[in-house]
Image (cartoon, rainbow, N blue to C red; front, top):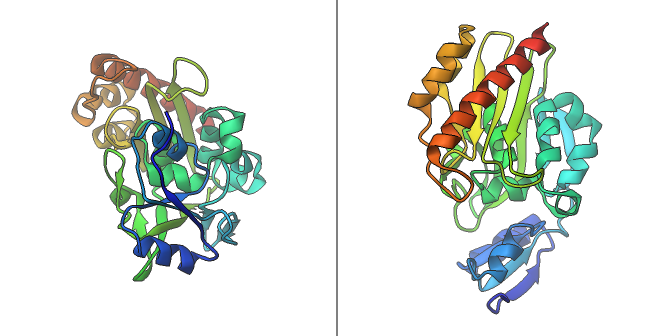
Length: 277
């Protein structure tokens, strides 16, 4: 299929992008386009205007400051995959990025696009949640930050309001005592995961477990977190019955997804334990 007709505008600056979005309620942002173009062609999306933000300077930067690493919205997955700053300061993201699609997709897809699109089976939203990160947003009322725990609202629904642009994500920079784990099940490498898990364990004993592919959003497994923090892997796996209620989908049944979630938990728990040794 071909997309429905739409207008196109290339934003000259962030303020210009916000202005363009504010003048058209049916506008969509074009960054990497790896999800948007597909939904346009299938006519699942039918905006009247595409606002291209690729020409806006400064949105493709990676910087470490104030104990955080900031990743601009236009940083490509491939750029993140090669980044020594991300490998050193955000190793969980470094672990996850190679699982995203294939090289052609990673060459164009953007960090900001993945977070803003909020596909519940995508890796990066879960990583942001596991790391306790935040999203930087620009809009007609200025800039604001939203914690990852508050950003993902529902299926493909986020805290982004009409006229707003996601400009960057920030996550705490890794410390010597921080450990990370990541695993997913997919039918083929590069496919969306049937179930996946991103984990972060702090030196103070706090553990954050963020599942993807098992709900309408990335899901914190809070009961399992508490059990795993006590060192009880068996209780953590059992606690997933309280934390997760996966729906059936084309990938697998909810029962299969819950089983996979338990297997992933045990694998990631071993990864966290090995990192401590």
